[in-house]
Amino acid sequence: MDRDKAGYIQLINPRGEIELIACRQQQDLLELHYVYSLQLEMKRTKAVRGYYWAPAGFTSETMKWAIHKSIVLADQYEIGRLVDCARAKGSRFLEY
Image (cartoon, rainbow, N blue to C red):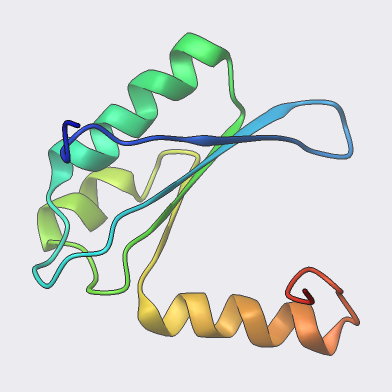
């Protein structure tokens, strides 16, 4: 198994458009090439938005590159904020 190759979760949003999610657990900040690969997959699948979850965070180069892209970068704090927001709005997303 190639540990550098990301698997993407493909979702269909309420408008019927494709959105992709990627996640990578590592101790170091996530480098640009991982997020760039997500953008390439977005183009291939015609996804309108991508989400990259990396609890350790992202390099400054990665954050600067992604700022004008339709990619949401979520570090441990943003992941927590998204979960709290979902709970506050009554989402059952995290229920088993």
